[in-house]
Length: 212
Image 1 (tube, rainbow, N blue to C red):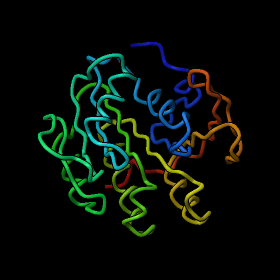
Image 2: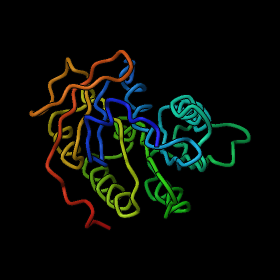
Image 3: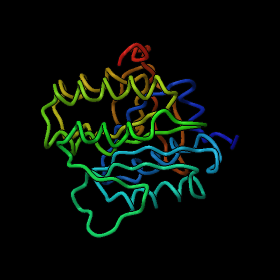
Image 4: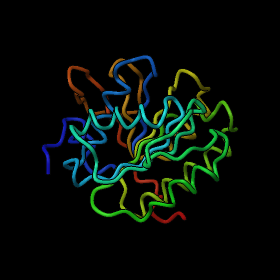
């Protein structure tokens, strides 16, 4: 297996990770790229839901992070910006169509080998879905991904939401990655992503492995 980036080392055995970074900062994409690298490209299955860029653009981002094409990929493009013919790895859904998003992912599960999942972003989905409904969606999705051995991370811009929403969603994850300058729950571990410093807050296991 490829050498694990420092961020992966800091996460230890955390499999459900929330990336708490402003979408306009370099930290978001840098952390995302590091979390995708769990194995060589030829041994990696990529799963993603993208609301902030097209499925094609997300695949280019993932290819750059991995250093090559993944063995298998499925991207649910919920950006609403897709036109024309798409790669076979890309299927489309609306950002408020949570059932459609789940169906798009279910078509390629269970998965073989090392699988990683990215949802970019919860902040965009909260523009179309109320926090309670999204909480239930994320809880169910994390449970399904856990049950088939997928390492998952999702993105949330905490500055765009009230603290109640942030605390509720964050409670579903067993680790939070944030810019080192941000306030994150203690204890934290320092880590680096390229030249960027980040803080990793570990949380007790949430028991999502028992959810369906």
